[in-house]
Image 1: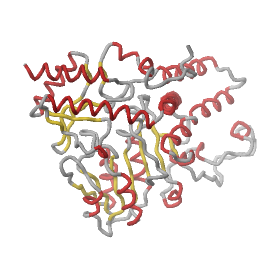
Image 2: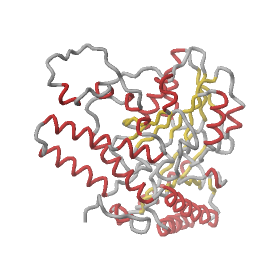
Image 3: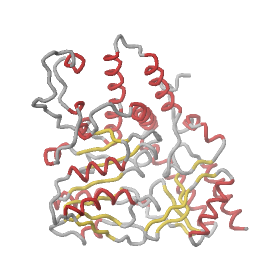
Length: 406
């Protein structure tokens, strides 16, 4: 069967993930499994790269560029953006670093972060401190962060708010719409790390405007190949610092690059015109073709399944998990308000050492979970994705019950 043209639903998509036959995989928040459609797409690219079916190496190179570019419209559809607002990047870290350098900060500006964040959400902004930009942490309350808490820390010097739409240790999903409105009202840049949400719960940047949104492919998008995307809102691109861009970020010459390179009169120094598009923030040269091709295929699978259907399925699994943990008298760390739920559920059986011991107990039974903490929030982290089903949760709960009985 040609996997690239097969039709998949939540009822049969599990066959796309053969690793599930041997283990209970509940750790998409760490690094997800690759679907067969993505593996096949990359294999097809490698065959093409090996055999060079094009009439010339120039056409071969152009064909590879076009295959990579297919990831941009796929990413745009995922978040209801325009293709020219998308840059393909290596990772969320890469995307956040671009945002930190692109926003025109001045000495004395302030950046607000929540203290639940993964360290990489903070690092690019901490590097701006040498230029007089201050970074301030907004403390969480009971494992969550609200627009009101952030608003209370705003000052006229606040230039940007940087936040994960879903927090990595406990799965708290913020009210992004409220934070977006606050940023628009105050003319504050909003930078979103969406890696723990997209692929599980949708974000629509038309309904909920943000200025930057970074998402690596290796977690809930099921594309662990070193490629993700950065969304940059079109209306604000003219305000940004110019990137260190490459030639593929230029406006395409008449007749295309193949024809341009055959023109005797070209010189290396010219009045180059860069595109006013997201891709101007890419490296602008030969890039990660397999990563982008795998990402496009994985995004295609998510699109076929439907984001609403995926989120409903995941919510059902997390409902089952939380109910089961409560029946076992296990502390659920994840905030239980439905609007703030995600695909991540964290729980605790005691101190960090006890949670690590439970994780090792589960791993020995091929039940894959993690232990994660930040700012004293966390525990055993379970992340249920669309390829999981109720039997996976039952197996986890049975093992936790067995461990608790000693």
